Image (cartoon, rainbow, N blue to C red):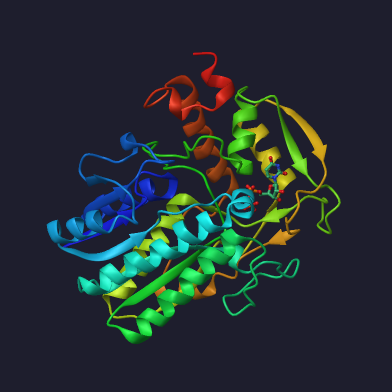
Length: 343
Ligand code: UDP
């Protein structure tokens, strides 16, 4: 039996592939390499180059492999882009998920884990961990495209012998503690990535988007979850589905938050090198504080996070960033523009 990982060459997907292989699973990867990298997929996984929306290719993959579960990571994730190109997001995140689920059902594949997002909630009350029962009112097409996919999966599982878990990710960060994978996506705007680049001299400064939020230090608070714990949540969700567990939606976060200043301090302290900080206005659409209530994932799947520690998240992110800068794996494409010019 094999597990099909779509988007397995991307940031989270590549960590997932490693964790599945470590667990002794047979792994098949489908990735079109729009943001991921071929080198990020170990040889032990079977790799198919192509799009999740390519019906012929997906049919071939399902015919050639004894797939019992699909972990569907492939998708578009840049919020401002989703505002500019909403239909691309509905196509990529919603329509292609419908197609993949339909093909899974047709092929008798009953287990499906879907990468969803905290963006499905929209505005959340400040300072209160958000539970899955909270209202889902996405503020942008990205969150809406993921919510619609969740709703389709719910209806499909009611009609067919098909069960899914949708995991709503909070702020995923960090890298494989063994140094085998990390966030290499070009132009990524995640705070921890940006701060690591600055600490390593690859970026001149970090802008803090808003210092007047109603939080203790005035900067935004997020629930940063180590990517290794996130993939562990997928493993436990997969085991849950294989045990016959009914469809679920579950948050993936730790239930505690750190401010932008907490993050920047941790990065400076761990790298031992200060960098310039610029106080900038709030970024449109940002909430003050977004923290998960992760009771459900722990209770239902038996998920037990092992890296719930900001220093560990930052240290692994720094180690990966150092490696990208000093030893560019896969050539210049892994470097962001400024650095590429120097090589
Ligand atoms: N942030 C910041 N400067 C940056 C990037 C992010 O101050 O260069 C803040 C952002 O406003 C938010 C937090 O850091 O409060 C996390 O932002 P990120 O883009 O990493 O994830 P998001 O929560 O927006 O999905």
